[in-house]
Length: 207
Image (cartoon, rainbow, N blue to C red; front, side, top):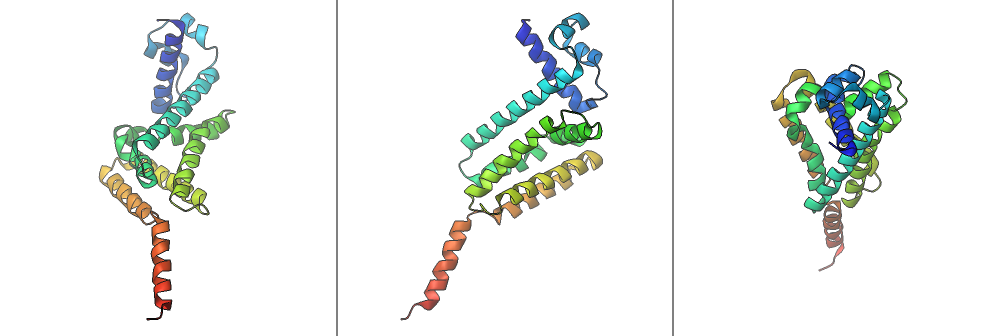
């Protein structure tokens, strides 16, 4: 393996271990064993676990950005794009039921540790928040876009936490369905507004 490839493997392995075991409970040895490299080769790329954490956060930010861009290219309507985010709860069910949300769990752990990287880790949530806000703006809810984005984030995080607690997929399906129904009520406000104005003007017409 070349240097870059080895580094990539280390970061990817650390990403999975931090998610499954937690940052604090993952050692250098755990990561080196997962990548099957010597400790000396490992230290050549990373001197501290904090350096690995920074690389993992960068990886997650990059992957999240690519995912959001893919959703935008694959889905024409903002409502359908937001649904892609909501359905992560089912798409990643096999992992969420055991380990929770990778973003939420890392942010929570770093906050408990008062780690210097907690603000950097929260940037993944900020990416989702900014992207969701933009989708609600496109739906015509500019004034409340950020509040709606935060509501979706909070709702999904709550579901992810309970999913990993009770392992109840039926509950997750029900919540996803309710979230989509709630979202539908916020779709096409311009059309709804046009209908309201049309009916209001119609009552004023003299025949």
